[in-house]
Image 1 (tube, rainbow, N blue to C red):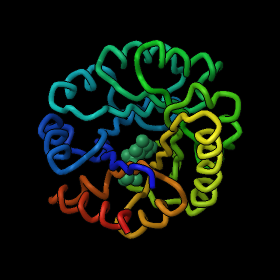
Image 2 (cartoon, rainbow, N blue to C red):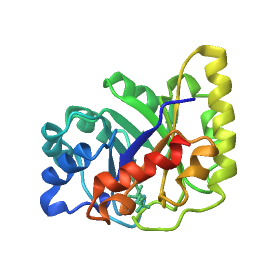
Image 3 (cartoon, rainbow, N blue to C red):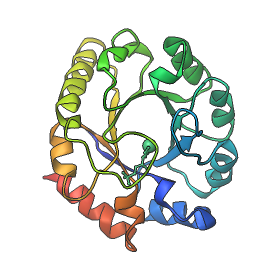
Image 4 (cartoon, rainbow, N blue to C red):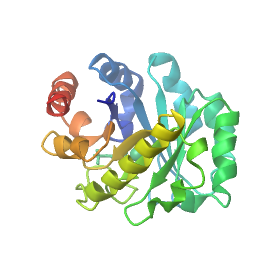
Length: 224
Ligand code: DX5
Ligand code: ZN
């Protein structure tokens, strides 16, 4: 009954042709562009920052969904807001003051999200529901594309869905429930059934020549 979104992760795109890649994946039906920021500190890999966000911004109209895998977080928030990010999500372990960082993101005109690693308890949500627009559950350990979906994500998604639905019933406020890591055509249906509404897919989309074909097949699996 909720709207669903496909958010291709450009981590698996060809970085030498990034403008063309994001235009192509949006023409192919992407709802959001998922933008993975890694700092070789919070996670053992190094990717892209605000300059690259600013560079792709004029190429696409859809929301840019920035996933910060960095520590500390706060200094990057104004930089990504200025670079055209629409959603900024971070890992609670990486911020000393989670409530303050969420407020900072909204103060900069962006939607705010918290990201939960496979072993991070959902309890981090409880006292900040009013500051959340997105809850992002990692279904792999963060740092790399192309890993396998961890099945422990499914019961955790059901628990997150229950908390979000209860909050919506009490307040009328909608929080997106996004899943990131190992999402494929053959498992997206069960991930959707467990409560996710927003699906990050990196290697599943950018690993194939026909982006529109993959996005169509992903959508078909969650339309049933
Ligand atoms: C992993 C990143 C993911 C990654 C997903 O740390 O946050 O967004 O790109 O890639 P796939 O879909 O290949 O697992
Ligand atoms: Zn991500």
